[in-house]
Length: 118
Image (cartoon, rainbow, N blue to C red; front, side):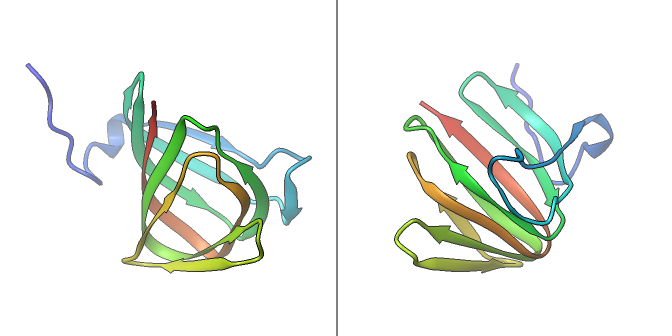
């Protein structure tokens, strides 16, 4: 029998971790990042992620992508070509496979995330 997971519920049972950007990738601040993993599968994970203001370089593997929806706050995704997109509460974004750029948190952010590896 499979279980159905409802976003935002079951947080008492979530596996919560805290981390910080790798020093070599850090561009601004040293933001604390809190992850509440709500579902883990060998090829997919999802949960709620929160982060303080700051910026760091991101490099996605060719087999990894992320869909996310901002619950509160504001982030800016910078591509290596200099373009960027602001994502605010209620909006969603996708970080595609092999994406290289900068993840900048402009206002403390809370988001739902789904990471898929293939």
